[in-house]
Image (cartoon, rainbow, N blue to C red; front, side, top):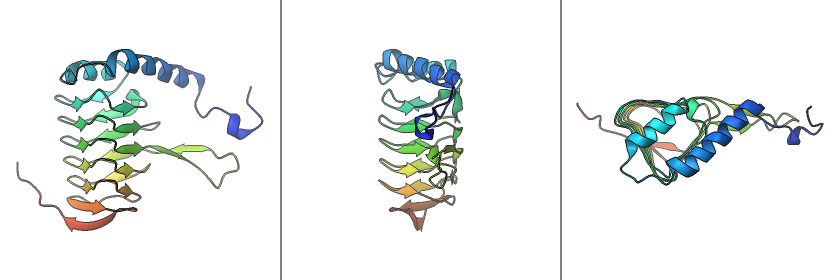
Length: 182
């Protein structure tokens, strides 16, 4: 039975809420208290909950991942302590990308034009070798190009071009980044 007030209706089905509850328990008891060097342990826990995680990813114990089953990481990805990955829809982290301390990948919002204030979500794509710096935010539905940098505390409201540095609120292009050779 649905609540007559749309603000009181759950945004997600009961099965999803139960799965997130179970993940919250595992995060609290097994993921969060694990020693920093135990990256393989945390990768295993994320994979048990459906994440696709490449080799040598360093996901630190203080990282908050809302729905592991909607997370795809390439190889050698780093997700720092305090980073928040809110992913009701899939979030892709390309190989060698970095999500720094307290960065926020926000995969959902609400339709403020809708009287029901409905939740909407969209995928976020972070390209290979991109860097989301500390306290930076990436909004729902955006693509961060390969090698792009979103500077400290900046907010990406539009797609970021490859090998470009962005800063500010909203983030603006400030310079090209030198592409490193393998």
